[in-house]
Amino acid sequence: MNRYVKKFLRLFFTVGLIFALLAVLGAGACALVGRVGKNSIFKTGALKAPGLSSEETLSDDEKKNLNWQDDYIIYHRGVYDYNDDIMTFLIMGIDKAGDSVSRVYGEIAGGQADALFLLVVNPHDNSVKIISVNRNTMTDVDIYDEYGNYLMTRKAQIAVQHGFGDGVEGSCELQKKAVSKLFYSLPIHGYAAINMSAIPAINDSVGGVDVTPAYDFEAEGYSFKKGETVHLMGDMAFAYLHERDVTNAGSADLRQQRHKEYLGAFVKKARSIVRDNPLLLTSLYDAVRKQMITDISAQEVFFLSTATSGYDFDSKSFYTMEGVTTVGPYFEEFYPDDDALMQLMIDIFYEKVGEY
Image (cartoon, rainbow, N blue to C red; front, side, top):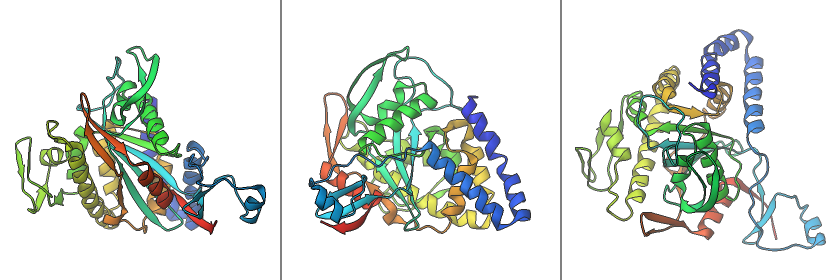
């Protein structure tokens, strides 16, 4: 077990003690733990604003009139400020099986990030948003040889970046860098990478999830019918979320739609259960801890879970990237729409402070 997982486990199992102490010490202690968690998140995450460029170049006088700040940008005649209090986390579903994660050696042996999501927590409007990143997005990927030596940077599917690392922290850092760069050097405050083989355990920890497929498809021996609600349990949940027909163009896009539907149903059910049984978080963690790598500490989890307990989250909280999927020489390739991506950044990570 690597040292980061050991550290996380030690911290996680102190949460019970923290709760007990809070019951004795009261709200002051709760605030203290919250501050520790929040400070830790912003200490590990970059504080610099994304590298969006303004549509206009202003003179010194114009900047003075607008009380211009370094992280302001101009977009469609509006003046926008990056929300420095926003917290962004990268969630990765790694296409690997096995009972536990382990360090690997060899070129592209770290496993591909078949599912990529940005979890965005905004304390200004009390919201949690999820951006689904298309795994076929063509972007800059750093290529390494089997010995871990950097070779070059080239355009490739963003999902393969994880594979060029060590399967643990090194892979996560590479994937985090690639996603951040795709989103204009967006600050990412933490990550969690979970093997896709953990899906049945995660799904069953909440008693299964109901979904209604948007189209007919077969997956690993299971048949799903358009418009017919099905209760996913065990391997059926894995089949629903993992399977795609790579011979059909756009298969990753269709699977991404299933991910979106499933996550909405899962989160809704999990939140309702946690309200009555907070220990669900412990059972959920136990279900995935051996198949997960994360740099998010227990103190940070505690802060986030308490701070966001009343935050808005529904089907409108999901965002997908707009763009075009084509069939390349070997695989599907997704090319984001630059204007739509810029608008997405403005809508989620910036706040309007004036007009130009």
